Image (cartoon, rainbow, N blue to C red; front, top):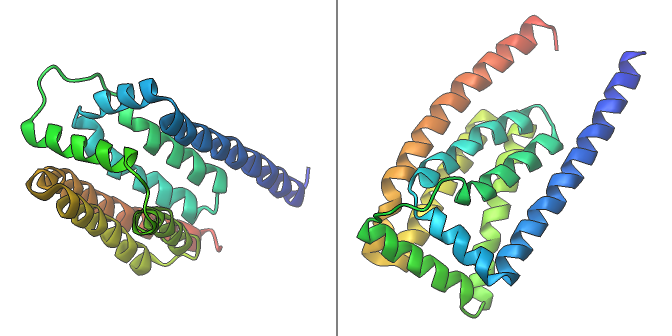
Length: 200
């Protein structure tokens, strides 16, 4: 089997993986939108702040797969990021700020969708697309800048709509941003050095 055939086979499998996880992402969003029981169950488990801390960390494999130009890997990471909302059990005791913030978030998602709300929501996939494109094009500085924008946007939205309760996301967001920047920076440098040694 030639290198060209291996490369072609990888692209086909990667595109199939991307399509499968794209369908799963759409199914998850529709289930959250249309099934009230599933929506409530998911948010109940999302009160566990462990999910708040791990969600930003998915940007690390997201950036890695974008760097490797694997659309399947990017879409799989997005699916895992979304579903991580309910990976952990519902806590018996919930911090007051966390409770207030998630109540606001639920109200925001279930209330009428205005044009401005749609625009704000569209900024999420736009920023993630920008992040993937930055590493797809092997631009570390732009990628880190987009990561900072994502974290800043999350904090601004949380505080803007959740007032004092929105400050509950500050520590997880800052923790996630710092860890992501550090690991992505060193990972990028390592990958670049490896590619240089291999003459790519």
